Structure formats: structure tokens, C-alpha cells
Image (cartoon, rainbow, N blue to C red; front, top):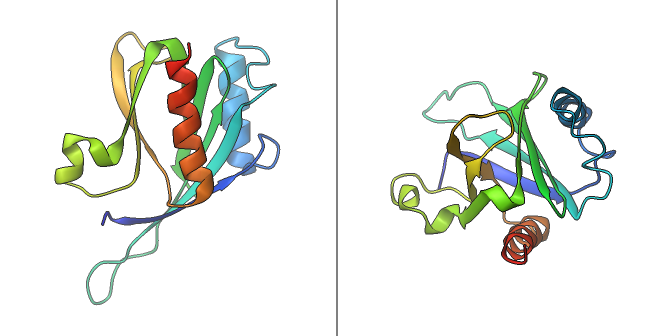
Length: 153
């Protein structure tokens, strides 16, 4: 298994960790995306705790991820606990998604989540990002809904 223990819960943009939701709202303003998250199809939050290694281990590191899926957009914010998160977004029609567990990278680093590839807002080139997800029902629901929404565009 990977270096992180992940836990995903369903939420709303308003019940998401305040650092994550504020970062997404700042992103909306910066790129003049208006009320793109006003009617989300799904919103979830993942807490990733880095496993301690070795006898003494290192300080526990917690990373937060917030994801908002709409009928046209995917927004995700990620950052270490108590730090300002970075935010990425993309129009769904610009994206390809894959379960990380089905990727070539999984053979090297076992983890759980989604690979999201395509052109992101404000980026000149397409890229791939990893969205870490836990094993919970909310994570499985998000995976299925994201794939279904993209397939039905």
C-alpha cells in the first residue's frame, strides 16, 4: 500500500474544510468563473495521513484535498494541513480520467485515487494530476459520478 492512509467523506462546498473552500473560491475569482460551483453534482474531502516509517518515524504529515464536481467543471484543492492549498480546475470536456489502480504507476507505487489528465484552467499545456481517495462509499460514488459525467458529455 502507499505511504498514506486516506479517508474520504462527502460534503458540501460550505461544509468543506474552510481552507479548501476559501482557496477554491479565490480560484473562481482569479479566473472569473463566477458561480461555477453553485450547483455541484458532488463534493468530497479526503484527509491523507502519511504513515510513519522506521523505528522512530517522522512527524505525522496530514494533507487535505477538496473536490467539487459540477456538470461542466472539476475543481480540486490540495495542501498540507494549516497551509494555503493549491487549486486546479478543468472543464470536463477537456479531461480524461483513470482509476489510479489501473495505471502503470500503480505497479511502482500502490495508492488509491484517480488520475486526471487534460488541459487545466490557466495552464498552457495539458498535464496529469493525482487525486487521492480513500476506500469509503463517498470516494467510490465520486469515482463513478466523475466517469459517468465525462462519458455523457
